[in-house]
Each structure stands twice: as structure tokens, then as C-alpha cells.
Amino acid sequence: MILIGLGMLCLSLMFLPVVIISPSKFCTCFSIGSTIILSSFIFVYGTKAYMEKLFEKNRFPFTILFLLSIILGLYFSISGNYFISIMLAGFQLITLIVFTLTFIPGGSSGISFIGQMLLSPIKGLWAKIRGQ
Image (cartoon, rainbow, N blue to C red; front, side):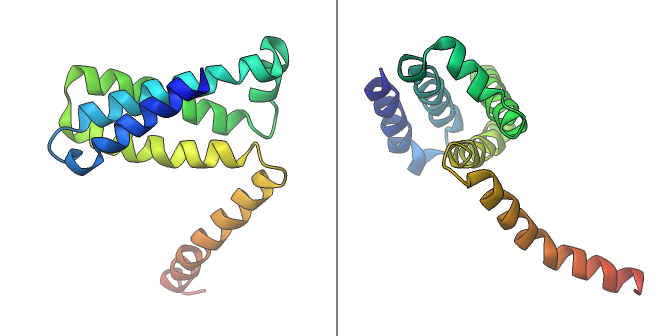
């Protein structure tokens, strides 16, 4: 089943060069592939254990964001909303990477570290603007 999901992701990557012209093709294939891969891990862990793993306290926000990006991506790609489909394709790619990193040991702390690194220049600029 995971091979089918990977096949859909590869198919979506073939639409990547034309994502500006037709984002719905990329977003639909990517969403379906992500859903298939996400559900294929049920066979590895078992349904109950996998659901518990998906909704652990430290993984819960990433799971919700990833599922939300899949649902919204499918909805807006089917409805044909061009601009939102492009934005959601990028958002879905980012949430897939972050979601995948949460399954790697130490991945959640790594995500927090990267987030702090990315936000530190903004916080420094904000402090300078406020005159502190």
C-alpha cells in the first residue's frame, strides 16, 4: 500500500513543473498520495497503536496541521480555486516534512530548535523596532 502512495507522490512530482499553470493536478495527487501513505502505517503499527501514536501530546499539533492541509488541499483543488491551491500545496509540503520529522527520535526537539532559529532574527528586529 505504501508503494501506491509513493507512486502517487511521484506522479504529483511530475506535475510540479506545471504547478503554476495547474496547481489542482499536483495538489490532488499529492493529497491522495499523502493520505495513502499516512493510512498505510496502520498495517505496520496496528490501528489502535497507530492512532495513539498519531495523537500523542507532542505530535498532536503536527498531526492536526497535516490532516488539515490534506483536507483543505483536496477541497480547494477540486473546487478549482487557483491561488489557494498553490498556497496549500506549499503548506502541505511543509507539513509533510515536519510531520515526518516528528516520527524520528528527537525530531520534535529538532523542529523546535529550527523554529527558534528562524524566529530569532524576527524577534531581534521586533526588539529594535520597539526600542529595547
